[in-house]
Length: 218
Figure 1 (cartoon, rainbow, N blue to C red):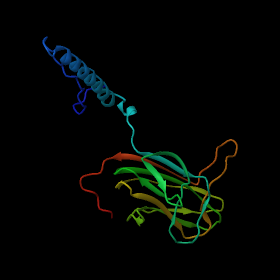
Figure 2: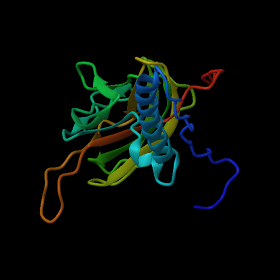
Figure 3: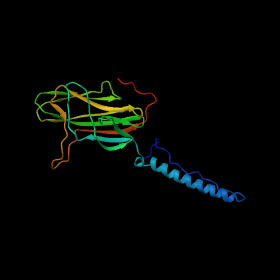
């Protein structure tokens, strides 16, 4: 591994002295042996984590949720929460709420969300589809992405990758709307040679601790 001044120095166990012979020799000898064993194990563990490929020993909050159900647009130009009824990974992140829409963080921090949905157009008319973020039920300003669908039977990926700060217990919802009823987030069953297609997928990864000064939503 290349030398870098920013790397953490390796931990060295303390050189515990041998106790002098005398009344307390047996006790002190046993004590220093216990401490020596403890410090050796502690140094080995720390050096594994801070060494090359040390991240393999770490665990951090992450999740992967998806939907195998087609999600129709119920009303034109009305916000609709995207649901994720299947949990694949859930380490410190979970889906809450009766409709499976609330992605909740157990720990405070900065999280990365990567969303992908399959929008299906059922008519030839052009359709404006909007995708955005809400935190604890409140829309995040300037978080909307716009997509245009055209052509009957066309399937288009709508996607959003973003970092956001969350306090422990706060949740994120992904919302969408469209100006035409002939659009849906479509799921498909497996059909040879490919496996099934989810209507929506979201992965969540813990990035870092919260900054000392929290950002102000736009």
